[in-house]
Every structure is written in structure tokens, then in C-alpha cells.
Amino acid sequence: MKQYYILFLILSSLAPLSAQDTSECPANLSIFAEFAKVKNYDSAYAPWLEVKTHCPDLNAATYLYGERILSHKIKTAEDKSTIIPELISLYDDWLAYFPSDRRGKSQKGKILAAKAQAMFDHNAAPLNEVYAVFDEAFISDIESFTNPKGLYNYFKTLYTMYKNGSDNVTMDVLFSKYEDVSEKFAYENQKLSKTLDRIIKKEDAGELLSSKDKRSKKVAEINSRANSTYSNNLDAIISQEASCDNLIPLYRSNFDENKMNEKWLKRAASRMDAKECSDDPLFVELVEALHGLSPSADSAYYLGILKDKAGKSSEAIAFYEESLTMESDLYRKADILYKIATKLKKRGLKSQSRKYALRALENKPSMGKAYVLIASLYASSANDCGNNQFEKQAVYWLASQTARRAATVDPSLNKTAQKLEASYSGRAPSKTDIFTQGKAGEQIRFDCWINASVTVPNL
Image 1 (cartoon, helix red, strand yellow):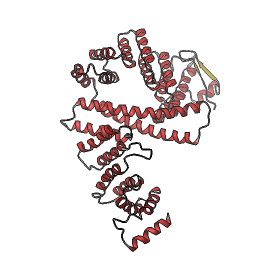
Image 2 (cartoon, one colour; image 1 turned 90 degrees about the vertical axis):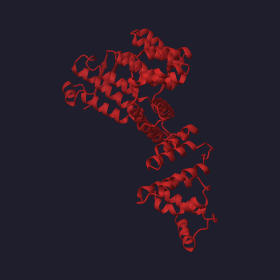
Image 3 (cartoon, one colour; image 1 turned 30 degrees about the vertical axis):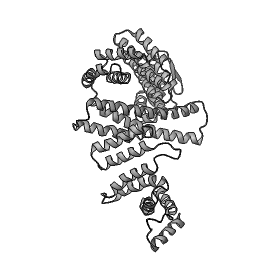
Image 4 (cartoon, helix red, strand yellow; image 1 turned 45 degrees about the horizontal axis):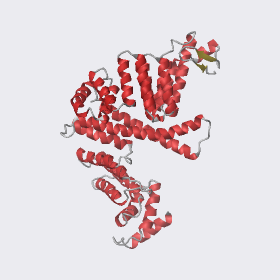
């Protein structure tokens, strides 16, 4: 690197490069790349600019590192007025010269989303223009548009336009885009879950992880946490508008027009179920229309909800099981099983709820929220299980262990699981209690619905 840098300084002192002279580009590419790798972006700028100016089609590194170099200059420069447009135009050139990666896979969505994010971050354009670039990225190449922050800001931009009273952004448009982006988050999370599930199964089987497995796990955990954060932020935004008071009249006004639209019916029924608007007669109409149009796992699940609402538990379970039979995708099946477990928990059917949560985990081992649900079931039974006060409180150890497992399989739940684990542990017998009772190291079995045991910690 030093030799390349010395060569660059010598050539620079002799004469400026001609716009027609591209012979120095390979050397300059090596120089700026080495500087950029160690985050010395100030030194990387001059040789990078030479390559960008004279040989824009030389190597994709010009744009990969150029993004970092210019972002650094924007952060540190007093006058950013010329650098921000330089960054924005970089994405246009990137798209012109390297629209695909080395494997020939399109990067259009990724590049356009990065451009829109830069426009958003630096207030480089009106919101409608920023949204248009995000939208082009999403529509033209959704596969490579994976950045969770970009996906969130894609919807946030539209939401801000809606709140500002934009004529083109109706509530119907807003909810439709929310569903689009939410489904994209679910798709990306599923890909990450497949990686984590594969590794979890190897760990549970006692197999040693390869270095590749360890790297894959680390990357998946980082991306899973980011996806979870921005997905939750997305839900937080829409929750301000997705009340039953808004949803019911919106879906009612559009029902006749969409009663033959399976996608619309599924989304409407799902949203009403999620917001607990299923008591309204419209929910019945949506479910009946959906089941009549195309009987599916979703429609059978919603019919189960209707039977649940009517107090017909056995019929509800029958429809839930039919839903599971009709669903072949393991991850969608896990989602249905978790939803059933949640509904059974609300009805106080703890054993049944745990049964469905465990079945969800069989299909998706990385579903940490299923462990959180089971842990809460255990904790809520502290006064119902055990033969004495010590044993009743010992249930909290089981709840704590289960909460800890949630963080192990799903890093996005780490903070939540840690809080629950600490809370449950704090309610379990103290060291003094263990010493007084002489129970250290003993196993306590719960013969109630839990039908499991826990080992008292050693002092």
C-alpha cells in the first residue's frame, strides 16, 4: 500500500492527470481501497475521485467504498452543500455501471433504496420525491431491497405524507402499503429464521459448529435484531391509525368491490383479528367470503375464531386443526400454531396453550416468542402448583429458564427475555429460603398441568 501511495504522490507532483489518461486508475483503485479498509476516508478521497472521474466502470469498489467516503465527508465537512449532491449522483452512476453483483444478480432495489435513504437523511428532496425513489426500488426489484431501515423509512415517508394531508395518500393507500412492507419484513425474517433454525438443530444435537456456521449465526442474529426493531417501529406507526373505529368503516366501504379479491380479504381479516375487531359483523362477512372464494388455512383459522367467539370450543379447535392440515409451509404453520396458543391462553386453557406453542417450536425452533408465552403460562400458575409455599414459588425458576431459552433462540428478544428472566428469578425462593428448607440441588416436580420438574439451585 505504501508503495502505491508513494507512486501516487510522485505522479501527482509531476502533473495533473488528463481526463483521457486512464492508465493510473488501477493504482489509484488499490490506494483508495487500502485507505478505505482502515477507515482513513480523508486520505482515500483524492485517489478515489481520480478513479471515479476517469474510470467509472473500472470496479464496483468505486461505489461501495465511495458511499462510505462521501458519507464520512458529509459528517465532517462544515460545508456539505456540494458533497450531498455528489453522494446522490453516486447512486445514479452506480446503477448505470454496476446494476448487478458479481453473480449477475440485480442490485437495483438495493441501490435505489440507498439513494432514497440518503435523500431522506439529508433532506435532499421533497418527501414525495424521496418516496418515489423508495417506491421504484420496492416495485422494480423487491428482492434486493432488504435494508430494514430503508423499508421502515419507505413506509414512514408515505405515512408522513398522509399526516400532512397529501391528496394522493388515502387511508386505503396507507394500509395497503403497510401490508406490502409488513409482508416483506416477514419474508426477510423467514430467511433469517431458516438459517438460525438449522444452526439451533445442530447445537441441540450436540454437533460442533463450523467457522462458517458461527459466522452465519452471528450475521443472522444481527440482522434479526435489526429487522425486529424496525418491524416493531412499523407496527407502532400504523397502530395509531389501525383502530377498529378506522378499520371497520374502511373495510366496509371497500368490501363489495373486493369480495372476490382473495388477497384483500386475507389482509382485511388478518388486520381485524390482530386489532381484536373480530366481534364486528363485518369480520363474519370477510371470513365467509374468503372461505367461500378459496377455502384455505387462513379461512379455516378465521372460522375457528368465529366458533371461539360463539363459545363453541370443540368446533373452534376442529377448525384450527383443519387450518393446520391445509397449511404445508412449516413457518406459516408455526405462525398459526402460535396464534392458536395465544387465543387459548386468553381463555385460561394453559395446558392446551402450551401444547400448541410447543408444536409451533417443532416447526420453527427459533420462534422465541413461543418460549415467552410458555414462560408466562408457568409464572401464572405459581399459586396453583406445588404442595407448599416453597414449591409454589419454585415454579418461577421454571418460568425463568424458559424465558432464558427465548433469548437463546431469538436474539431479537434478548432484552425482553432478560427482563422476564430477572423478574421471574426475583420471585423464586431466595438463597435464604433454599438454605432454611435444605433444598439445594433437589429436584421438585410439579404434578399439576405443568407436569415437569425443576432443580433447586445449589448455594
